[in-house]
Image (cartoon, rainbow, N blue to C red; front, side):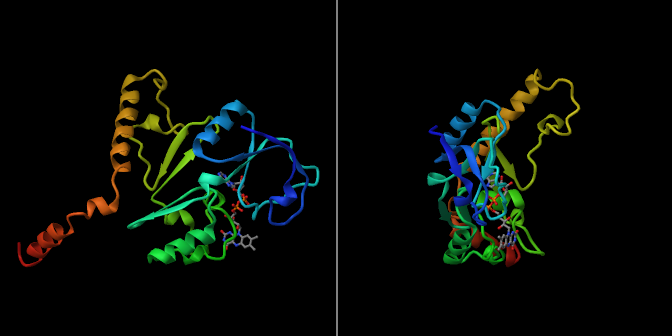
Amino acid sequence: MRWESEVKLSDEVRWRIGGAATRFGRVASVSHLVEALAELAGEPFLTLGWGANLLVADRGVTSPVLVLGDELDSIRTSPGRIEAGGAAGLPALVGEARRIGAEGWCFLEAVPGSIGGGLRMNAGSADTGIWDRVIEAEAVTPDGEIVRLTEAPLELAECFNDDSNTCPLIGVCRLSRTWHKALDAFLDVLDGVTIADIAGNRGELTQRLALDADGG
Ligand SMILES: Cc1cc2nc3c(=O)[nH]c(=O)nc-3n(C[C@H](O)[C@H](O)[C@H](O)COP(=O)(O)OP(=O)(O)OC[C@H]3O[C@@H](n4cnc5c(N)ncnc54)[C@H](O)[C@@H]3O)c2cc1C
């Protein structure tokens, strides 16, 4: 990771005020982020999105600041699904949704910010927030672990939740490790499938539904 020093944060945030970051890292991809976090080795850091919701003090920031870009500033679509990187903009997401005819995203049209900042702040309107539309999000923890945040928690046992776990066997339980492996395998299978794959035999499916509707 190439760290820049004394980067003026006023150039990086919407309000155009504030001091410098002593150490500033531009992260190009998930693997690059994992590498940067390994270099930080647990040192507290700050994450900057588009800086729409941040005021930076004139004295600046001594903690390292990370900002996402490059590969993470991307939006891909497939039938029924939009995949966006954390650095992509909310207005671009709405534009892409409109282009593919996906409804229900207009409430983010005027929110200035990135997907990452939007998820962090649950960007939205009085009626709805971005998390109401998210199927799943991939995140990197400060320890560099890649985790998946889903609509419904995929907690197979109490010990899957670090915050509420009371089981004393955590860390030494082989059953728990096996469940984690099984869940990873389950998610790996789903990762390889798109809605287009599932709807590939559309003719057969609609025929079966029509038969049922006719009294089958
Ligand atoms: C004129 C104006 C209008 C606005 N209108 C709305 C509105 O209608 N609805 C609304 O909800 N908000 C609104 N906002 C607030 C703001 O736009 C949103 O909160 C937006 O989601 C901030 O995104 P950002 O990328 O600029 O985040 P930043 O301001 O850069 O950061 C905000 C927080 O998110 C964290 N963060 C940023 N990126 C990441 C990341 N990749 N991973 C983890 N954490 C991250 C930061 O550390 C910080 O804690 C408005 C702001 C302005 C200035």
